[in-house]
Image (cartoon, rainbow, N blue to C red; front, side):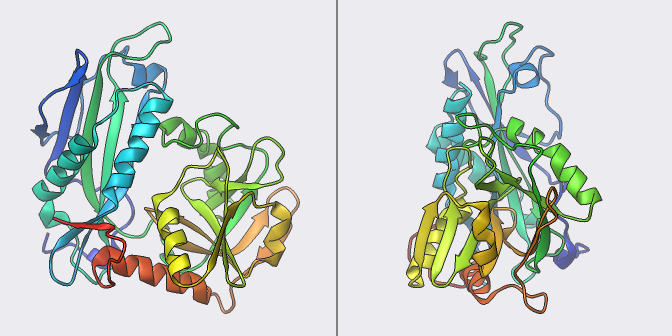
Length: 338
């Protein structure tokens, strides 16, 4: 790893040495297996291929100034994966198995955890898929849970610099009472067309509106939306939005900073009254938004002065990142040191 330019890592796949796997068969989880293979063998009639029985998580490990490696709120990822499994009728991964496999994958690849000070981290991808054979539409009886890792840089190439986001109305990310509140692959597949079109038109991401009335903000494809107005941290509340662990943490930090937190339906008409807006999630932490452009109406909402992130977003970002890397006090016991 001596020749790796840690400060210029993209957010993408990076080959490491090992991944870990575990199989659910005959009603129980088996032993953890370590593999150096980047491929998996599955039956051509596996339910993950035909009926979308697939869920995943995104989390990170961070190296502090002390050289120690830290996990951030892994328990919340484990719980969210269980909710995803319940939502599409897969076998639940027990929290203790989730934790053991994540820790094992990180330790086996510890040399790939970027050094402190480069803004890089080790991305962790837990993946749960239906491997059982079905031709009729039914849940599988067998599943595979695996964890692989790789070092990454910022999700958006701009890093913490503000980005332009496109508001789309002709595509929906998730339906009311559908699967928008769980982390399953189908939600992301449904967002790809609009997202790739936006990239061709000069926007790194899109902001979806809720599917029923198109009156309220849903979320960005890979992240939750938040806004700052006065002393308020405002973020949408909806059953079709994935509960972001990063957003949950930012809400707590905002409260710690003396701000009022509002989690509620956020109407599109409110966009003109916000002082700062951003997208937040594990991959980006916070991506400040300098402008929102409505693709259908052409209306533009501007937020950044001099092309820089707003002061509140900056404070929130630095505080959360500081906790993750061990530079700030972990007052809520969010960090697990390996």
